[in-house]
Length: 369
Image 1: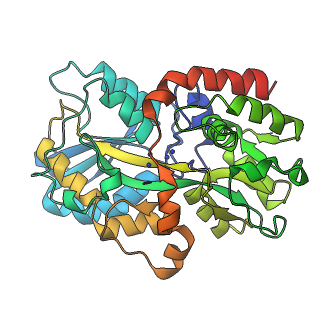
Image 2 (image 1 turned 90 degrees about the horizontal axis):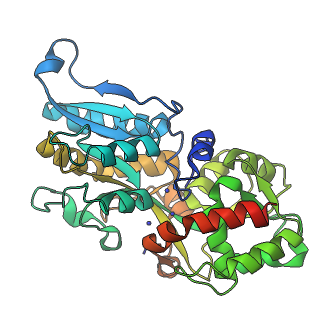
């Protein structure tokens, strides 16, 4: 199984820092919106006066590279030719969640499509916001990987949690999270502060915990503190430490490692033997969507093999459909073997929501203190 935990974009670290009180480090894909507080609308469709007459679909999404890839590979080539104008309502995740929840009793909502990470999507779906998917209207529904299928959202892209390491410094490849606690790596393990929940998960698994029990992480994190673990304020700061070889090991998303490799940072990855999860970025139709037929057209376009392959090539995210083969060079870097896939499970979303405050408090007040 893959799953949303989705990957942090190199240029959204400030946004992630701003939202950390309310998110479980499910940062949007790479280059997420730089417009931190004010949503903006970008249009892909018919020019001038024709816009008022055209069919529309309003997509609540991140901006940056993600929004541009939507525009280049989904909006313009797949949706606009069907006579549908695409309006991107661009913002980071929290304003989008707030708007969805505030409008859930309204007859007509803002969005036809809402894009969120899997954890955020689960939280909003629990408030009865989204339309149950009608698979008869979703032509590409049968192509979705069964492990990623949900009744209320379509999986767009995903990436797995892995352990990144510098192969020239860690000459015996690690096999799991527990290897970070080897004393020979004192002072060489680094963490991105904004990934506090993911880092806590890795410590819990190293200490014998589970997807529904992070309690063992407390002891392991304090042990890691005594081993001079390094904490960086952002993913970009951590990337710099990996590039300078100040840090040799870190838990991170596979997609992020792929982008860092492309940037010349010396890292390889392993899917930890203790087990891990994935982050899935998903799309759903609010119940009060004004253009539901157009929304289904857009969801189908997101699942087209050409669109899936484009996101893999640019950002290192894995396809969520069965029929999107990747070029051999990319597949070699980001595809998971059958054995690796068996180590992945879905997160316990309810546990994460319930435990979020405790996880954050321990990270800030005990581990970082």
